[in-house]
Image (cartoon, rainbow, N blue to C red; front, side, top):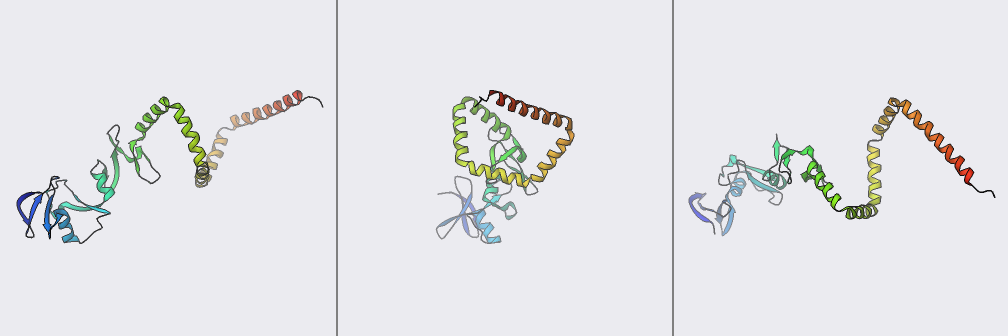
Length: 207
């Protein structure tokens, strides 16, 4: 049971629950006042996908101009330290170092959601784990590659196809910029192969 106040809204007494949110009761059904007000002026919305947010974060300030509708993920982000500019998310806190950093400093999961720790902190944790558990890391690498070999190969092919022209252009540019080193490498490679053939012929027993 919420704490009774002296206020009324549309003839219904307003109570405050333990979370400090104001509520009213209509036909034995408790309704949050900010949700009731939003629906009254803006109509119904999908409560499974959206939340009503108090802009100034004062949950008892239920003026219509202090309310906005947000997707559940945006509402969650807003209450967990994410920052946005002109309606676009630009920064979030790292759960390890607790600094609010640009989203560019976070890795992205396959589902396009950002990881909880920044790249720097992830790198430190990862190196520490690999140092302390080399056998586990080696075994995981083998089993994971074996399990997902086809997926890794397919992903590599797709990445190559997307950047094929860029890779070829870079290779051509690099070759032109390092002509002498490239020629020296080709020369040494031919000499090594020639020497390997000669050694193989000398060690082959006569039949």
